[in-house]
Image (tube, rainbow, N blue to C red; front, side):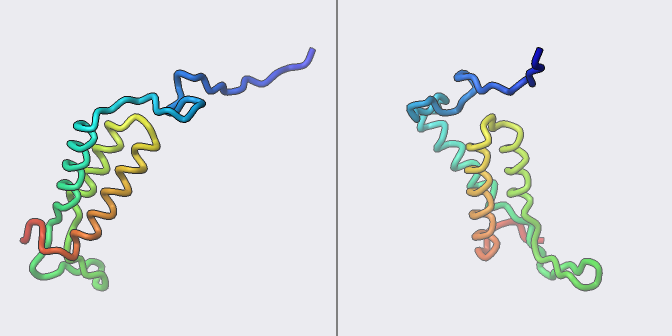
Length: 108
């Protein structure tokens, strides 16, 4: 008798896309736009210091991306599919980096 390994099976109900390429998860355009606006607004929140704080006597710290970190935690908690999480992470990082150079955020 040959012993068989238990193989993980990918059932159709667990897939994000069907075999024909159609998306099974239905999210309205309004929901997507609302999430996009909220994540972009979160990524713009930085706590900026008037005089940089020096860490370990070598690294100057001029700002902390509080909104970007908080946004990543929200994405990790509420997005079910990895494909969607990657998309939101990319948006948060790009907007967060761009907003570092713009005078936006909370100045201390």
